[in-house]
Length: 170
Image (cartoon, rainbow, N blue to C red; front, side, top):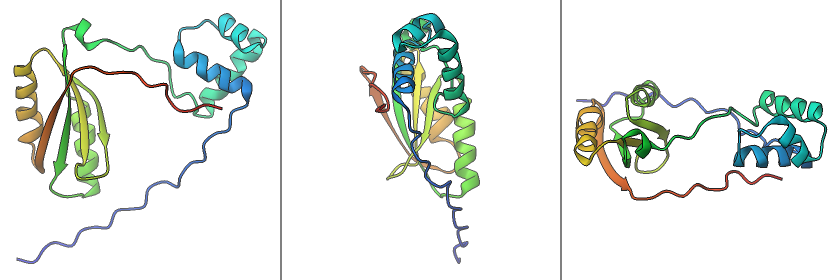
């Protein structure tokens, strides 16, 4: 039986140039990375600028896409989900619609913290938080390995994590 020809992947967006930040913007971004709840007054003081200037600068960083949002970082263990894992998933094909659908659908499942479409031997890495090893096994078997188009799944438990310093700024 002849193989169905694969539809070529469309080229992705062109590489974006890293936005250039002046010294003040770099201070604002660094400080907000450490504590996004800083008041405008405290942030302005740390950057050595007026509060009105600080507010305008932060709005500009958001508008330019340098700051994509402000969020609360939750501890899964504190919410009853102490078991965390990274699950590598390999798909049978690389049809754009299949790849996009997998990422969108899996990201909506309860317990999924993040889904990355990656290069290399695997197509996705899924970060999961759940209540027990049995829940993790059931999640992987029910929602990942039995999914149509999935040919390989490898689960790695996360023992401990360390938060990085983020993107180099300035």
